[in-house]
Image (tube, rainbow, N blue to C red; front, side, top):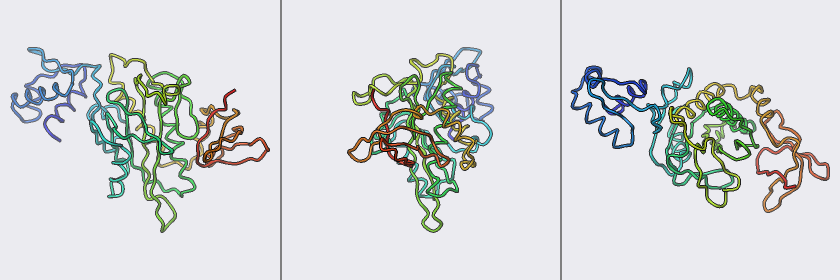
Amino acid sequence: MTLKQEILKILEENRGKSISGTKLAQQLFVTRSAVWKAIKSLQKEGYRITAVTNKGYCLAPYNDIISAESIDPFLRDKAREFTLHVHQSVTSTNTIAKGMAAQGALEGTVIIAREQTEGRGRMGRTFYSPDSTGAYFSIILRPKLSIEDSLRITTATAVAVAKAIERIAGVEAKIKWVNDIFVNGKKVCGILTEASLNFENGGLEYAVVGIGLNITTQDFPEDIKAIAGSIFKDKPKDTPITSILIAEILNNIADIKDTLIDEKYLEEYRNRSFLIGKDILVLKGDKKIPARAITIDDKARLVVEYEDKTIEPLSSGEVSIRPR
């Protein structure tokens, strides 16, 4: 950890409180001049750090720049074992995480970016990932699951995200099978799970779960403007909301990652679904087939009934609510 990171960690742990330059220098065994240079560098990066004579340096409560140091104070229990890598801008956090997983990166390695230039969604779509208004991160998991049960990873993550949004933002979060989180009728989060198969045992070698959150994004591209929304209109001015939200999601994932076979979370997933009982369209190739969403079964598949009364459990694919 560099001196700048060490100072940032201390400021984050004392956010809103003044820490004297002398105390920082003594604690880190450096000169006050070295502390001053690190503070200036952080200020140039956008950190709102005030310097008051006879009081010291203070990181503003509303400073919302994502860093490992800003997220760490809000992690609990098992999530504190995760390793966070934070970047200003990347092509795709999933792409980087997959490369690291293939090279043997441990479970709980998390890639976080303030911006993605080539963010990816399901079905080959792009995920709009502008700087400063969202959160984009991927976590490497190594679950002991068969390929048949791999859908549980996405559904469990959806529950983890929905619970975090409700706890931190105080708004109801609903789930559209299989991977989208909606608030007030708008999509605020997409989840992309990509996995590598171990051909020797038929299980997963690793899974990378990518999460894209619209925190305060407003200016969406024309093709998604009608369905996309954000969790907040404006960021709260008294809290680092993005870091808190990322941490809460990681806390929830840490709690469930070793018990994905447990069906307890599936009931919560069903209760949050807004598709069950609705008339939908099932997308298969170029066809949109009318159907009705019946339930979500114990393997996390969406069970649908077509107009000819044929019933099918869907383990993949795309569905949309049928226009009235």
